[in-house]
Length: 369
Image 1 (cartoon, one colour):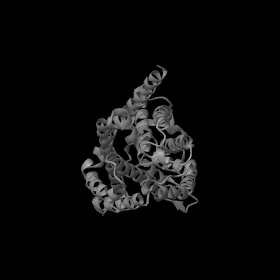
Image 2 (cartoon, rainbow, N blue to C red):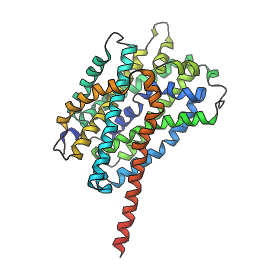
Image 3 (cartoon, one colour):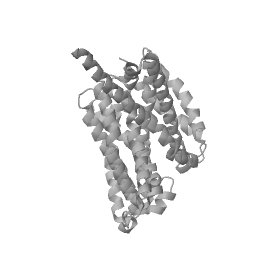
Image 4 (cartoon, rainbow, N blue to C red):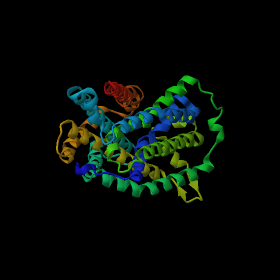
């Protein structure tokens, strides 16, 4: 077994799923989803959570049908050697592009909110050094790190939401259901894309969970992460109002500036940015590790550790190319990326699941004759 992908416990797996689900969405999603749904954005998020059951069921079904195998391996089983490898290489392009987008989001945030005088390429390179280090240490180390950080992140989130309670204005979400159905549904679709469809990356990680409880851990991780996101959306609307939430690039970060407690606790936005850095670190590292494992299995290499540096060299400049500015990123996320993600994270997995079901039926018929 590749030493980079030593198995992790079900608890560690659940924590990684939570961080992956929160990811970039914890800062960006309130503004994105409120753009169409206005004060009913929290309703769109709830609809998205319900709809997210579908992709989660698909991923769990695939993982259950092919225990111990990644999507690369059952691509070749179901599609044949060459077509399977072709589809796997397309997934590689998807993962690399996704990694570049995540790195670009990190660069945009840091360069506009904290290190405003630092060139974005330097920020990308510095963050990528951490990703490369974590990827070389392996997923077991990443799982242990997540297990250590998780309680601190959850406590900080609870304190954050608690401090916001006095700032709530219920009138900000009124009238409820004033928005037309179409914008709410469109916003709900965005909530399904990020985070639920992006969880398809775990089709590369499932075989590396030690116990048989991996399905339960995956469900709980996705549920807890999406509840945190929905809560952040609801608090953004209740405190900031729909209009300010929409016009803010990073509503959750702006939300922290409203906290005033006892005259001495204020402007704790760095708490939010700290939570975001941690969740983005785990999300990007897992996507990056999935890319290295995909190359290793597609080309049947002995290990994936030596691929880490070459891929990092590709992703850093790709992050510059993929999005020239923040406005372009938002348009791309709402239009092209939704279709792109749906193709790789929904359409192809559904086709594979149907093929797996059909082949099982066909094999049973042959066995009965």
